[in-house]
Image (cartoon, rainbow, N blue to C red; front, side, top):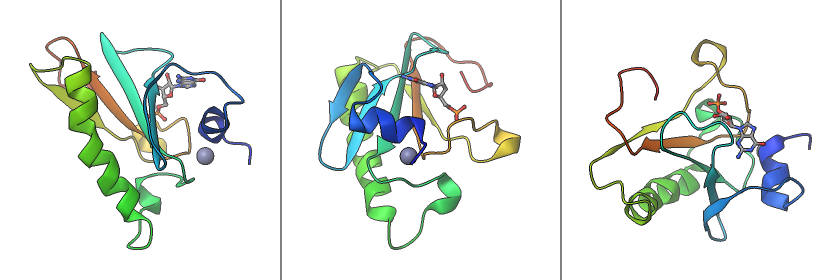
Length: 112
Ligand code: 5GP
Ligand code: ZN
């Protein structure tokens, strides 16, 4: 499949990993919008939030159960933002479900 994040999961494109298990991967965004900018993705290909169903949502729960561990490892004790862009109006550019973790500064009301 011609999917950038599936290629990162397969190791065909390098990334700076911060967390990995059987179901999910977290790595640093190549173009950070905040001092800490991490992307958390399922290893299964789900195109966006719109593709979440009762059949595949366990991995989404697992992502959210893991985000506090990642945030703690990144020392985001002052807080952080979790964002998922879905579709054209949100500016989604990579069509593999991902959650941005943004932190390390006081964030504006824009995404970062
Ligand atoms: P979106 O705009 O779809 O919500 O977010 C896609 C994110 O993926 C962007 O923040 C962009 O910087 C990041 N990104 C795009 N290509 C790569 C890449 O090859 N490696 C990494 N680490 N991040 C990428
Ligand atoms: Zn994919």
